Length: 144
Image (cartoon, rainbow, N blue to C red):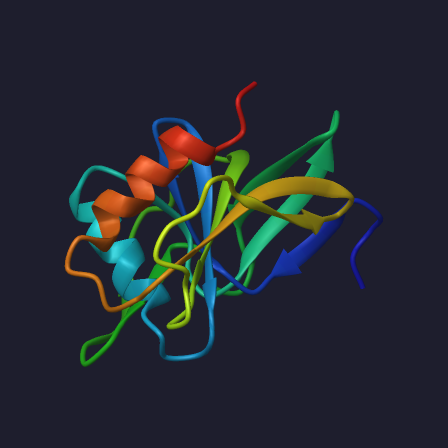
């Protein structure tokens, strides 16, 4: 049981320029692989597979999940150690989904712990998925 305003959420999470991006989707769709590709482009891992979230001052903050902090699952290699980045505010949720729309005019919203977070669907089959995530963060992420 988590105290009010806290939860463990099923997502991988990376920090890009001080903003946390949650990566969700069905099992085996490529969440950890996308996180690795973003890390290769300069992002920092916050947590893989599960992320600890807390609400403070009408903002959602991401931290490493207690059970997997400091590790990332690399398919065909296993759990690998990786220093997690510091806590930061969640600015975007990316859901990997094979039925993602071809284009959107605005992001949807997903409410987590009472906070509405911009959400976009991206096809996991793109060769430029990390670039799309960075562009989506810039275009649709929370503007505070």
